[in-house]
Length: 194
Image 1 (cartoon, one colour):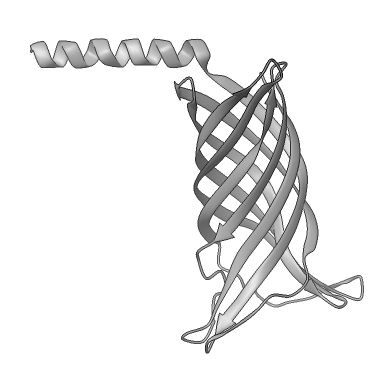
Image 2: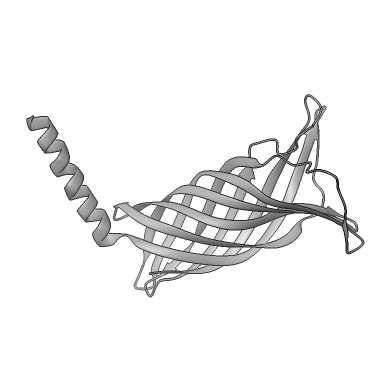
């Protein structure tokens, strides 16, 4: 009984601390997306495709220097080669651990990493600027991988962010044994913490 009461008190105290300091943020920016094709000991990456991302997230402080940031957002991925483009849109769900380092009176630098899960919302192909018809989707509906991020959080809430998403899942439905296609995306964004 004592352990249960102590656990409940600890949970309430922790929840109160989180609710007093929790912030919510929005960020949007540009993606430089690519697909990594590998198999038979070789790896090929076509040219980067420029797209966008938009994300909402929460910032739960665990300590003054560490936060957990779960989020939900749209992220354009894919690749291009000459005049052919593959445009993929995902609903990404990241959970990042973020370390923050004060910078005089300006704000904080931050770096972080964590896993993400992605749900494919759309898949489009184009050739010479015109949409190409396909009978069925070639890409799987789910993706997962790791996020790496860094940036500057100004004291007024403005944020400047860079990031890299490293896909770990083979995202193509019918790839031959030993072959895989994985998402890669470099991001630059501006945001605001409330």
